[in-house]
Figure: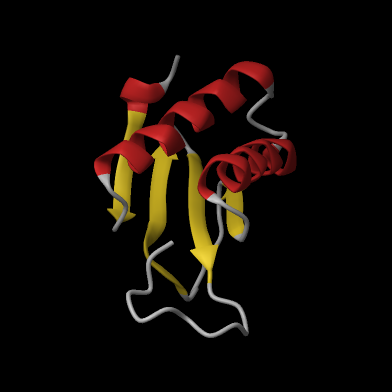
Amino acid sequence: MLEGKAVVGETDMLQTMQQDALHLAAKALDIFDVSESTDIARFIKKDFDRVHGPGWQCIVGMDFGSFVTHYHGCFIYFCIGNLAILLFKGLGREVVSSTGDC
């Protein structure tokens, strides 16, 4: 597994959710080739939707910029080797709860 090789750049997730994200990314890289970024993103997103509720977005690639709005406690950006992974629960048009939690 590649979990130990992940470098977290930014996050506001609880440690347990961070570990879920890193574990899923490592699992995805065991299944898919690093060039299959859409498949990796789909794999991570679908599992996070299942476990942590719908609304998760995942971007995977080697060169991208981003500027996103997300629920508090629902954002992580990390790299495994040259592959960057951005995972967050996006804010929609719905009214955000007073706590803003995922």
